[in-house]
Image 1 (tube, rainbow, N blue to C red):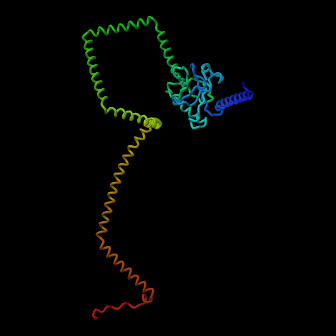
Image 2: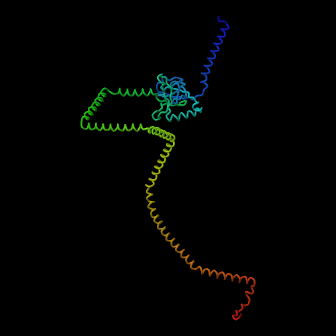
Image 3: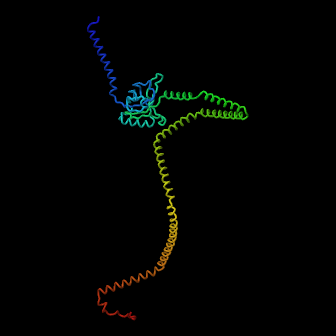
Amino acid sequence: MIRKNDYYKLGVFIIIGTGMLIAVIIILGAGRYFETTYTMETYFDESVNGLAVGSPVKLRGVKIGRVADISFVPNIYKDIDASGSRYVYVECDINPDLYDDIPEVEFRKQVQQEVKRGLRIRPTSLGLTGQLFLNIVYDDPDTSTPLPINWEPKHSYIPSAPSTLSQVEGAITTISKTLSSLKQDDLEAIIGDVKSIVNTIAEFMKTEGGRAAGNKILAILEETHSILSRTDELLADPAMDKIIPNAAGAAESLNTILTRSADDIIAAAGEARQAMTSFKRASSVLEKALSDPRVDTAMGEIAPTLENISRASTDLTAAVSKVHALVNRLNGVVASETSNVHSILEDTREVMQNIKELTGTAKRYPSDLLFGAPPKKPNPEAP
């Protein structure tokens, strides 16, 4: 028999276990409310059957978030146009740890830049289960045009791209419409034309020209077979095992260089375009200036001026030659009269010395200069 204490212990165990289970559920569930995420939204103009809240969001196969909400655009935005009223609204939470916890404003700017480069979000199937996840990929921005919207998204916005299943359905629908547009008479006419062409070819092949054409075709096929055989031999050469990887590496290196230099190439092309524009503008201005009648008049006046300048240069050359001859003549005269010039300078020096002595005597004995006796006559007989 079970005692009363056993009932008490069993009740306490059940209460504690239930409390612990509730606590674990609250802790695991409440952690999502305290985590920080980037909010991203997109819109689809197709069925999203298989996509649910909590479905993963992947970037090139790497999980970066989950689907947080699925609704219709009119429930989120008001005053929208008729085309937007049928869009499906999908909101996603993106893990900021994969983006170094940058501010959400910076994250939104980066998303806008990548969207210009072709960033799109596409519903993708998880296999045969029918479940969908959102795969963020890069498409050609020229061919993958975003859905038209007339409202400003509240969060970071990535345009959607049609899913693979939607593209297949569209292609099948187009083919079906094309085939349904063909009438029975058109099909019979096409089949008749094909039969006529086949009969014409068959009759031509029976003629001499057809047989010659057949022989040429056979010769071409034989040459093609020999070329393919030679190609197989070359590919079987062990050296090709090195050539192909080297060529692939060279192509990859070239692709890397082109990718890194894309901005420089674009900038250089823009500068070249600007230079060509400036050159065309300068050529136009020069052409207009040369077509001005005043330029012809000025050129006509410049010709006589240049002729006068040439004549003056000739006269100036002759004058310089004469001056040079005169200088040479003066140098010859000076060179020939050097001795006479020296004697004249010596006589001048003696005269200046006598004048100096005379002035000195006049300063010391002025009376001798005025009343002095005349000098004695020289006596030639004196010893």
